[in-house]
Image (cartoon, rainbow, N blue to C red; front, side):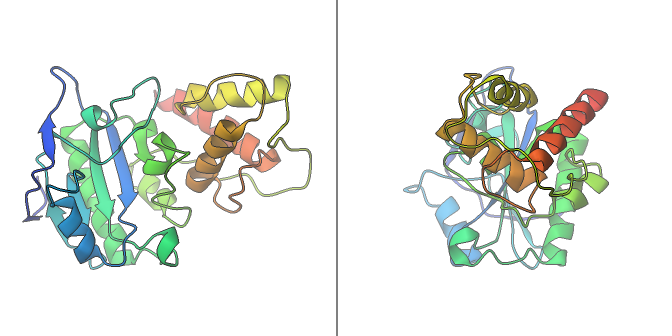
Length: 247
């Protein structure tokens, strides 16, 4: 059953690639001073951005682009070899000021609406759990949304997305910017194998730091610093095993 939504259609959309199924659900925060201003921008033809849905802080849902059409929400990004993220995804904007406006919490009523909307979308599109992603996952060098305070664990408990309990922070060896060697290559392989757009080069470069930061935002939010510490690597290994188990 489809949820009841307000409708304000955005002109910023086009046809999906022929024969390409929807297999990514991509979550964003609006990152603006107000959600009303974000809705105006997403429907402004001059802005050339949009999403399929917006969920405001009171849980009200607005549909802007029909699911069968390609909304323009992802920008340049990559996941598991796919570069046309818009072409294979449904985008949900969540009203939240984001990092630039104090990282406000997501109200429970808003999270409940996001959960209900995601569950509704998944009744129409068999999106794998490991392909329910944040904008920062597919564009780690550019984006930080929906932020490390977003409640991914709640969604996973409802069957939306993949989550493992993060390993606790402990002291010990880590990998960081400038490091080289087999341990770096193994880390890069694990991240790329999960889906992150990262080359296996054996050196901890800025791209690797950005991907590790994105991974931490989503899966190990207790410390987001781009350093592959023991907790980060152990969480990544457990997540990779979980992904194989549900594949």
